[in-house]
Length: 233
Image 1 (spheres, rainbow, N blue to C red):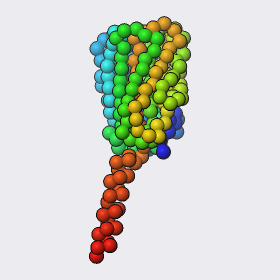
Image 2 (spheres, rainbow, N blue to C red; image 1 turned 60 degrees about the vertical axis):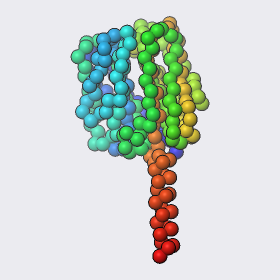
Image 3 (cartoon, rainbow, N blue to C red; image 1 turned 90 degrees about the vertical axis):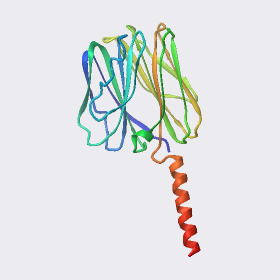
Image 4 (cartoon, helix red, strand yellow; image 1 turned 135 degrees about the vertical axis):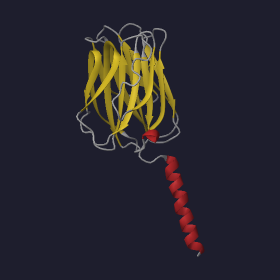
């Protein structure tokens, strides 16, 4: 069975620190993924922004925004998380929580791909190629905009939108979607905005189930070997 998206928390500010409340219902073992969007063209301003205990998966920038992605397996969580950087500007941090994920972080983040457009477009498309069955595919897009926009998600299968946030006070628009992938394969997600073309950004991550197919196969081999040895004696 694929992992399950459970809850979402967000906050935004024009400044150098965003404090985000822990998503609802989080218990030890759940996977949390944080996505940050910083409305500045400065180089990688979100490097090292996450609090201790989070793994930085990616930071990058184009001429309109910086993005960062950080991950963590919940363990003795506090009430909130403070993300801090040095360049004073509009920034939003989103945290999504998932259950039914693999308990080793490096395995739970099965495949990931990040994209920042260098030319303007109304949409952005991203792709991952999985090698495991029963993954959950999670996508988040962002843009620097002054419009109160909405996002439409399409792709391989039917992505279900989790949240759609137009932060006109901080000139940012972000959206998240997910879909279950029963079999391994090549998957795309496209996020299409409702307003003018901008230099969009997107993260696309495949989250692994509790026991990966390779681990199941390995356990079957061990069991079979034990049975065969028992039969020999």
